[in-house]
Image (cartoon, rainbow, N blue to C red; front, side):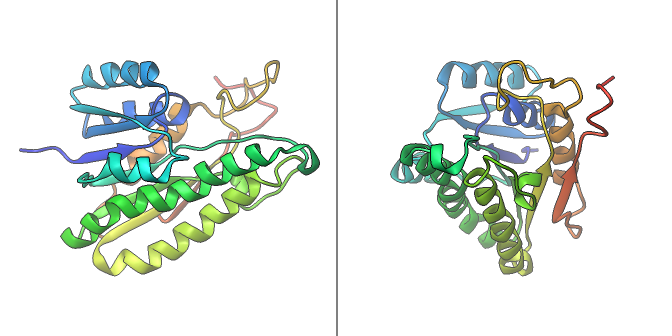
Amino acid sequence: MSRPTALITGASRGIGRAIALALAPTHDLTLTARDVNSLNDVAVACTALNATCTTVPLDLRDASAIASALEGHAPDVLINNAGLAVMKPFLELTPDEWQSQVDVNINALYHVTRAVLPAMVARGSGHVITIGSLAGRNTFVGGSCYSGTKHFVMGFTDSLMLEVRDAGVKVSVVMPGSVDTELFPEGTDRSWMLEPSDVAEVVAHMVATPPHALQARVEVRPLSPKRPRR
């Protein structure tokens, strides 16, 4: 019996890597990221958990590269995980820093989802899960671009959910709070933050929900910034 398949963007580290490891016992995986060596390391770890893995080195800022790399892919699950954050006051953001965040956090959602969604609609099943952020409904100093892109994620996923649910396709968004990843500057106290595996566990649960049940939006927060993880 064939296993379901999942395509994960930004799978080489952090939340994406954790999601790949969480789904490997039940899904065969297509993993994308720019860092080829790290991507291959994740694939080896997932293969040890019985997943068949395909790695697709890919720069999500390149729309034509996405179209070429994902042509013919028809996963059961798409995890739009890749994201980019440059936390700076608006007047310090360079045009390249602004554009890169828009390309990865917004435009890639269109190009990756557009590449695989038609097959889901045609067969009447599938699940698109996008990793957003609590910054998608909050704001903060230095987040003019990043928070703006995460607000876009909320509008995108809610609208797409309404468009394709009658075709049997699920669309969900996961909104983590602070996660212990390389996003934060060196010296930041990350002892209280979520771990990537915490978010991955939520994603795995969403993937496993019954076909007729949809968790459309899930917030995941650290219990308290005053309480270190145990």
